[in-house]
Length: 135
Image (cartoon, rainbow, N blue to C red):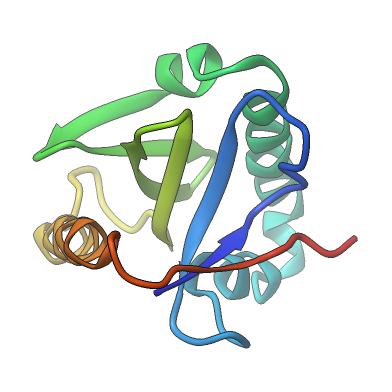
């Protein structure tokens, strides 16, 4: 399993990771980097929230998130949504991000996040590669 640091987590209170498809591909980071310019403020808001979380702890991200099901949460910034779950040791693992298209959370996105969480915990005892954040 490959995890990417979403923001610089070294020496911080908490860690925020995102699931990677490979050492070169991260679903969440690629999604955020490929957004059109009209989403810049929302993307920057998410990164600021992740920065605050690694510096200060879970309180703010928890207050801005909605619990969905099976330990999966969703945080929003404007029309952007990021699905995530907790792991032990003050770790948040993000599964993916979407642009909100309708009022209700799409069942497919939630099912996908739950499946990624299940796979993460089943593979956790095996090798996990962490790709450090790059400025």
